[in-house]
Amino acid sequence: MKGDQKEGAAAKGAKNAGAAEGIKNAGAAGEGRARGGLRRLLELAHEAVFGKSCVCAACGEDVFDDALFCERCLRELPVNGGYVCSKCGRAIGADYPVCLECKAHMPLYDAARSAFRYEGRVVGLIRRFKTGGRYLAEAFAERMAPLLSAHFPDADLIVCVPMTEKARRKRGYNQADLLADALSRRSGLPYAPAALVKTRDTAAQKQLSAAERAKNLAGSFRVHERSLCRGRHIVIVDDVLTTGATADAVAKALRGAGAERVYALTAASVPYRERVRTPEEALSAGGEGTAPPAPLKKA
Ligand SMILES: [Zn+2]
Ligand SMILES: [Zn+2]
Image 1: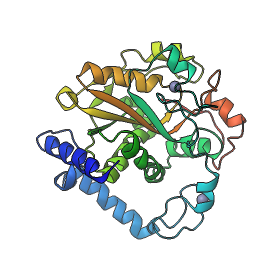
Image 2: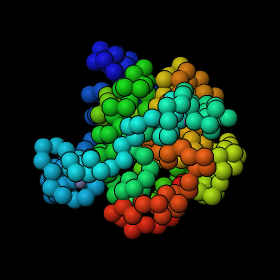
Image 3: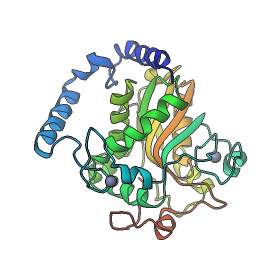
């Protein structure tokens, strides 16, 4: 994105956000909010004890400057930088415009992009991110932020894929919320943490086909703050895009609330194959990672 476009989008967001209750990080004024202030205080306390970004988020090696991944990890981690489906953003084997799944069922979001392919060490990193490794949000967001400006330069609001309150309490946090917050701070785009709610727990998705996932998720997301969404160009943030069914269900809810454009941005996405591999299959195909392999729970 060109600097002026970015500033324009951020300024627009900040201006609109001034009056809205449910917006975070809407420029300097938003930073003063008590909740954001407390979080920043905790971050500063964490930095005081553990030092600022002094080890690689993936391997724990010392890093210098403000790098979040070491150079070796950046070389080895599967960056989603080759051919990708122009719609869902998943890696595809050749230079086709869209993958066969998007061709068969065009998603309701305008476009999705992801920083990494969900394979190799990234599988273990995502697993760690969902089981206490909150610090990974910054490292992932650092890799996601350039995609936001490059592919969605007109975006003016960030939301996250919500969890039910029960699921969030069980995990202690929503990893998508951490990513969205980190991205908002990096990009200057306002973040509406409570724009959406998940109305019911849905069955685990990992064994389901794309069509079954869509059916499983139907009607499970509701826009809580409709006035925030009307006419907006909204980026949905999540950790992993598997088939895109979750992003699609959230996009449907946002469009129903009047969103003009809907994008999805994730830390990782499962490469497109003839048949989408389940997270377990991805693990057994070289996802030894640095965390113990275990079934991935998709809330
Ligand atoms: Zn490293
Ligand atoms: Zn696709």
